[in-house]
Length: 380
Image 1: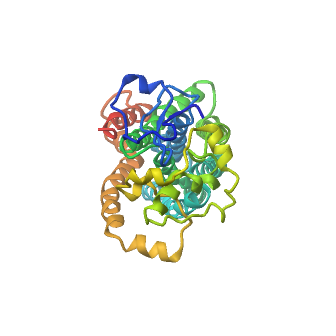
Image 2: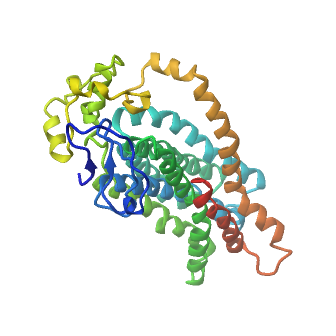
Image 3: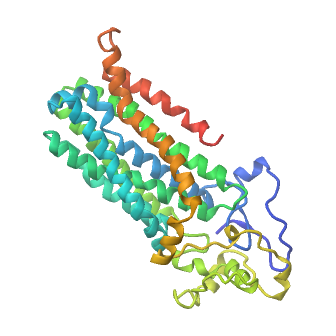
């Protein structure tokens, strides 16, 4: 690990003031929880930078593939499969149902196996129905295909969990906003990409029946597999190394010393003996009596992902802090998904006959413009 970390015996003063050099310098790391105070945006040799970029890239291709159908539905798919307006609407609803189910499952899986493995697994699983999209030949088969492609929406969970694991509380809000916004842009990019690709295939001589099916084999399925491989090769589970080593952090011992009693699973999880490997990568000091002056101001400083239990699930579900942001997310993200699924169809119906040359491709381009806003609206 090439990140900078304070040496043993030095006092902990918190995050440094912002400097432009932080964008390409090695991450400056909190020695207690090994989370980064800075965002080494351009330093791809740094595991913190790679985690940042791989998280939003995985989310981006997931959204690109999840919403690859709506750009081609207004004209190509609807006419080829002879769909009614009601069947198109039903297919959009079904595409969203799967992600609700997967997100409930993805959270506990992230706690147990880490966000990197969960992200890569969802992308690989989603690539299968994406590659089979061309087999749809009527409304029922379209429903089935879009349902299983909908699991890709669950990548939002490991995306946010991954960056929350690597970045400290002084910058994690900015980081989560950036990866969330850039990842969501995949839902807009797909309108420009899929319509342009379809048009190019049509110009090359393919029929409507073949061109929209070939489009899924050219972009969504390969992009999912490629990014999943990049995540598995270049990603890192946790600042401490493997996900099983997350309990070897100094924060665990420090929290126990100060009476917070964070579950000390170093022996249970087989992390004993890994400390030497960790110390070979970063300068981590053991937490002893001299650290008594270090005060833990929030459980965020020492929080460690743990497997979900019935007891913890009840505590989470009964907490108002779970439901309040969930309701806000329901009303905002729900509207976004509705727009993403229907915007191109609405524009096509409104202007196809009123404006000469306003076809499925033009509707896709205008819809994609809406999502450019996400690049700056999320961080702000």
